[in-house]
Image (cartoon, rainbow, N blue to C red; front, side, top):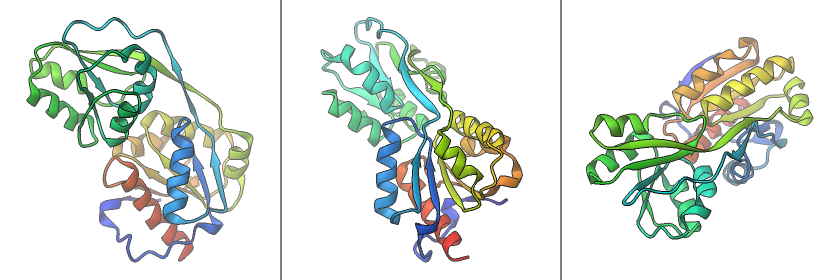
Length: 260
């Protein structure tokens, strides 16, 4: 097993032929289907593209009444979709971690202020704006990052409000069968929790496939460490926490597999 950073690889020189590789996507719906389309559009058709979300987004209750002058912050498009019905009358901008979350907010009729893709950058933007009212981070029950802590440390009033849960879902039978097959399997992972859940599933499925992991961040890569070492052929961390960097890292891995 080797660990690499996508920023250290040459994606231009890698010949890409994914036709003998299985792509397994475990993101929640509908992001899983969208990412599958983006990956195949960029890299070409895989031998199989399997969608097997290991988390299901479930609202946990109504969005609480918003205090006067409250600022709203989102770090996921799932939170935007869950919160949107309660925010129909909000005319002031909402803070969004990146372009995907911002696009989801805009699609729901909200006005996004878009950061550069990480909770740290979002915190910097909010702190620089110095809002007078409280900042409500509407998020999932299982939340990576420390947006609220950074805001509070900067002297702002901030609170995280869990408006949805990410409930575990078993891998599909088809996905488990692919894990037991001898062919190479490409596995993009987008959160530490999903990485840990898939790692446990790999153990339970008695996986034999050589798995090539592409992780969104170092935290995601670390969460994969629970998987049996014998099944992990490679693990690569994307150079940035976004879809484009994930696909470029996947391009390199596909090139190394198909060129072997």
